[in-house]
Image (tube, rainbow, N blue to C red; front, side, top):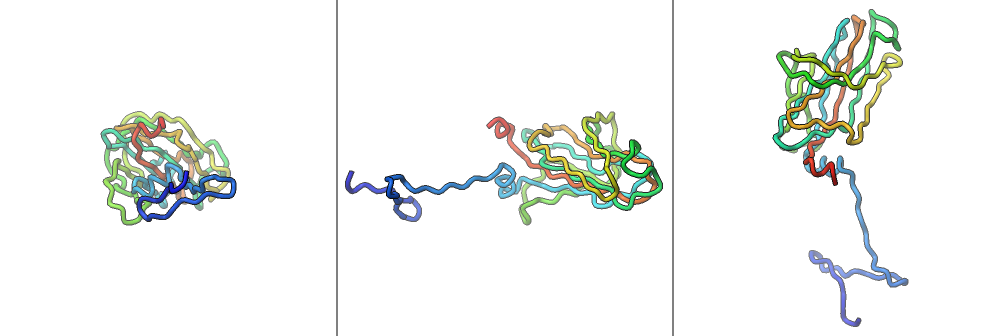
Length: 199
């Protein structure tokens, strides 16, 4: 049909057709994590160097405080550094665990989160604590990892399979018999509308 063209509404640039009479197009794909990061809806939470003692130590505690949005855990990375005074790793006495069910009581250090889009001023849809806060309630463990050696890091990559509902909590702990050294943990979470998970 003569005289018909397709043009970009913003630039006026005309679409082109190849020798096989196919319209030339270009597409761009991005993950939900990339899109959320651009929107300022992704945060890192870190406990940089928690001193080890023969006990259960909470490295990170997070509670979803948003009325409707869920928190999708993208990754959790943990490791010990210079662990001493206990059973050499790997050992049953030392492991990291993920648990739910406990709420913040007191202590620790609040607001350790950093937006992954530097300079974004999005409201933080959760409360987070590191530095071994005091928690109340009963911890319900649902995953654990025994480090196979000091300084070896482990990273959980749930890929959308770990979701914190509104008012829900999650904690990252280390259980150990070590009396020296430190433990580190980093969590990355993405705020999401529940409908997006069903898309």
